Image (cartoon, rainbow, N blue to C red; front, top):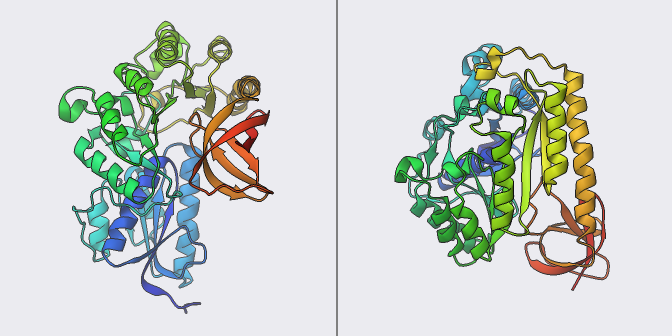
Length: 436
């Protein structure tokens, strides 16, 4: 017996995982709204009759979170609190047969490229004319823009190609139109994302077109910041850096996951580069764009990683002094090339090594932030939280990077606006300032 009245045309979408999944959910919700569905996102009090879970299948922790979320809503369905439960995204792309067997109470499982089929199941039509139209889940002043789907890289540890397929670039005209639509609706910052943004254009234009895409997006009226994420180091298109230096609305920021620096690890990971080339690339990037903020991610405990390999990574982090850095512990993923290797680094050792890297990075971040005291920065404000307005400089991406805090008492700034802030105090990962 139902415990509450359900809205039959109301859908609650739950998103797990990365920014690519966020975009997929936003597109899904835009399509549903165009088909006259009432759509909410991650609304715990929703009276929706339909729940759609957009899952992540990247690493063990993410997979477990996705399974736990499916089970949670499967119990709600059994209790009559929802009528239909649909699962989509990376986990169901990769493990659909297993999920259908283990959690049969789900009505439908769909993969990462099954949006038209999902809509058809709900009696909705896929509307091709909705180019760039999405129902944003982020504050409207910034939006993720997925410039391509899938990946052709052979990295040994990564299951993304199994879940997302081969690399497919979006047409440049479509992306420009999407940027214009977002700008009209109040978006000021575009965060460009892909599995490998540097590969953009190779499939449809037969050459790397990232620099041209940056230029055309930079010309869109109303877009004040463009931020580049997930650049692959091998074959990096250096002309994109020239565009970054020349255009004032392209942030001096680059997210480039390097994963490791030891030659032995890079070779086993099939990264197509070496320690020497990695150091050289970082130096070239900083020479071409002085003052650029570099973010990277690393992996601790890859199969066969020795103490010497780990020490090489520590030395690399100390030498390069990345502005931003994150590190994952290695996850042994089925059907990847590395799965053939023995996962022979103990889980506790993986964690210890990751913590050692972050301890160095914390010290680096504290020192770099301290150098900002007394300087003035253009800040985009994301939210008000208790006693502070909280924003970011051009050197910081949402959710993962440093934040700028100013006192809310006695001052006012509108969320979604830019303002100049003079930094008065710094900690390891935050800056505190006052409006100019």
